[in-house]
Length: 239
Image: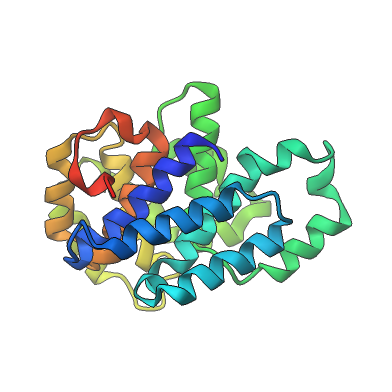
């Protein structure tokens, strides 16, 4: 299991607790983290791991709201670790195509951002919203207009990366309920507004968060995956 993904896994669970105002030393958080670590590190086939992840969350139902965020991390772990043990062209195989078909309704838009962060780390680049939209998601290319439609509200509000968290949250509230990116607007824009991160930033972020539990879990996951938890002495990263 990639260490940065393990950091992100812990941060997702702890961030969710922080946002949901659950006691940080709740034993169930430590238990689900340990069980999920075992799932991520197992040598089972990917779909078996998915079933194991779902069983783990079913056993700890209070964490069900972050089920799909945890699936995103499982997928990233596959790309970062498991796929390295497979044939070079595995991701072009019929087997992987079948897995994509089975999981087409799983995960969230955060998977794209995790993949982008992975690429930034590999290439030694700093995350940048304009780069993410134009060079990674290719929203300006005719072939990727589906992505443009999904991210249209973020494209139109890129100026918010220079705004306080309260303003980012205010704009999210004004988005059409049919917006495909509304649920992730606040954490995505907030991440690019402050990818360097200082401990006090998270408290300010959480105070304005429209959905405190999920928004906390999401940003904690992104920051931990990008930086690693060793950089921070902040309680929400610790289980």
